[in-house]
Image (tube, rainbow, N blue to C red; front, side, top):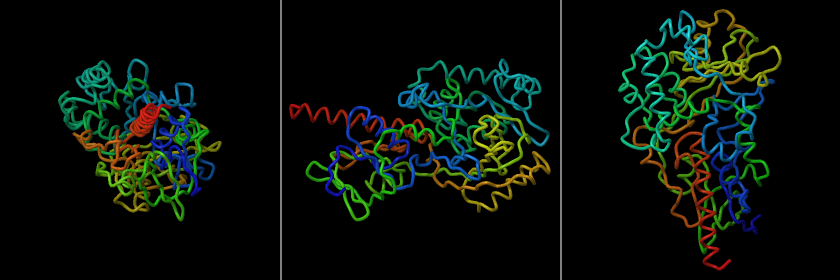
Length: 422
């Protein structure tokens, strides 16, 4: 390998790196992907545990993502669509929030006004219309503020904030304070309205697996350093090196900063996820369950929407606890206590499958975040950055960053080819 000189090397087989490699490969460019881990996907992976299929964190896919549609296509990945709306868990029971015209339970609970007042329902309609009717690009431009400030300008009551907005969007952005940029909030609300939420059949790991099909991927390849000289880029691995005409660095922001010295957004958002093996039928709800954050922010009976993730007769429950400060054993105990308030003694039959703390699930995206994003161009000639750090911390951001880096390389190659007369 040390004698090889490749056209393009991609460092990192997460979504950004795979998206870049996919675009380059499909354009006829020789490309190899180097991945330090034992599989593709980065943070978007699925594992088999005692016959259950669990993801590395609770994740969903918005099929309306433009990059997903370009890279995969509408029919390219079998999806399980998740029910729209949410179920708000309270001491007295459950209230459903959703489309009252399509969902009988949502219509019932709308009348009871457990979450939204009559005035709030009108405000929801105004919010949805303002986001849906605006040009998509405009949602990410203009003056910025927090998502909370933006929603308060619509006049929503405190009950709507505490029972719906904080847990629902807090789960998306890992921030119950709703301190996320209103630009980012508007964009992802639009994605939800246009395409809903889904999970690939076989778990979220099916997405990177599909992107990686047919690619040259080298696993457990630890990159120590990168240098550029004389029109070529050298990537130093453990005890050997490989050269390439161009390199894409598609690692997490911290690793990209180590390798390239580039400035990346600061402030990681993390969470702890607890997965349970439970008897089938404890709860038939397939919607996301919204908690009060003490400690459960949200929970989902994954197997109620996708039977294939659990063995016959069993159910898979995922619980999200925001933050990473608490010991995993302490988190599990607190989650079980909260679940007992929901399900009573049935919780004694729940078996813990896994407790996983993910310190960096995404980076903070406060108002003004777009001015803090890194450039795909780096200080090294022939080296490009493909990372959530360039486009935003989400599946869409990662995929789009890979497309962006690949497009730059293809354009660069075309310009160079024309200059050489080839």
